[in-house]
Length: 184
Image (cartoon, rainbow, N blue to C red; front, side, top):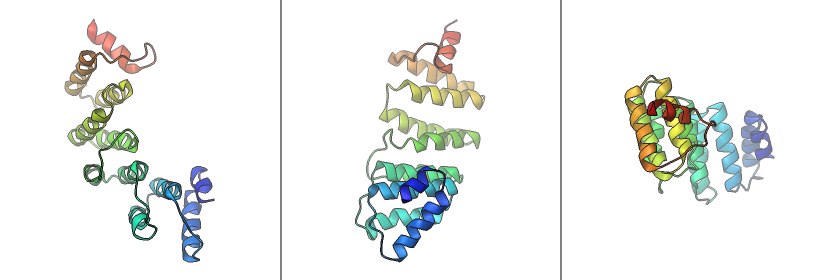
């Protein structure tokens, strides 16, 4: 019920349902329940409650947080503009961030829009390390650099893709057009 509410645009109701069930002792959450409530928190932005939920996973319910849970918290922090905290959270994860922390990619967009290009670049490097040959990561990063009018960062990114032999699907990405234009 909580997951259904959270996934269908009823985030506040999902959080209310979680609290009602918890207070009545009816709640036996699993990892999926926590993905749902943490995702709901990220969309309605109650940061403190999100951290309480994250901590309750292990403390109260004996569940081990997985990559998806960490991704929800990173996304939550990014949505409310706590960019440095999101980056610190990624760095403190007990395992290396992988593509599942794709919420971090949206945090990256927030970094760039907020003018924190250097911090955003550090997060981008973490994501690129987890998927070196994924052209989409480079495309996203290049579009962000171009949007921020940071051509000094755009061209090295394009060169890295060319040097690594990574290919984008022709005519399906803005990046493939940038590479073609750069080659001319």
